[in-house]
Amino acid sequence: MRASDLFDVSGLVTVVTGGASGIGLAYAEAMADNGARVILFDLDQTRLAAETKRLGATGKQVDVTDRDALNRVFDETAREMGGFDVVFANAGIGGEPGFLTLDGKRNDERALEKLDTAYFERIFKLDVEALFWTIQAAAKHMKAGRGGRIIVTSSISATKTEAFVGAPYVASKAAAAQLVRQAALELAEYNILVNAIAPGPFVTNISGGRLKDEGVQAALSQYCPLKRLGFPDDIQGLALFLASPASKYMTGASLTVDGGVTLGYVG
Image (cartoon, rainbow, N blue to C red; front, side):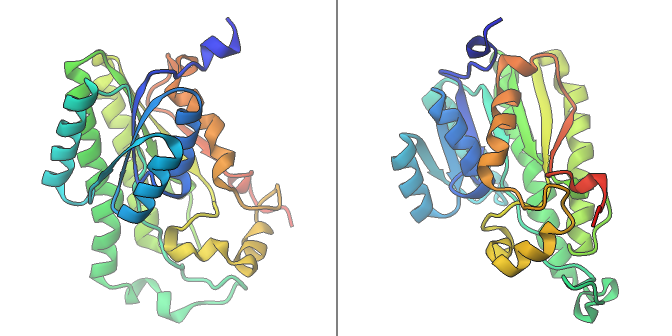
């Protein structure tokens, strides 16, 4: 089989939540550049307008933590596009600093017992509840159609402990990873494949753009065997793989893209 056929996503109706920046925008670019019909869901109307114009995509402003609004925009888009082929469930929030500072010292302000309930609830609202609602909405339309692909942005924090990221984020990503497996099991009968991409540290706007700081990048890069952090274009090939016929017999998987961070520290 030719690579052009194996990775063909032309014409696929593709929704990307949190699609106007960062990793979500990288997914959207990869799909649009290869002929998919892309719809961006995002809360930031300014970025949404700019990126949909640049990509020749469609944009829908929505807060994914508003379940009714999210269902409405999925229903509206399904009517307009005749259903969905691919949904990237990408919208999420960063974890904020952990119990160690970047120079390895204890950060008393971020100690486990001092983390407030509002912080925990905010993380779980977006990274777990809104994800669950997105999978529900996508599954409803895909079951009524010809199946499809649901691709969740998870994290390496789903399967490892973290010193530089807050505990609620780590717990939320573990929940998201198990949700992917559970959804994959239930939806397989309907030809709906559910997989996850688990990034390591990537330079995006998440957590207030903290990783865009060169000092932060330098500090974290020492823990990565490739000695650099990831950038959105580093994840595009994996997105194409999971959206295309190349992954047609894969479901319930979580694919790590982290420059080797989970392999361990090599000094």
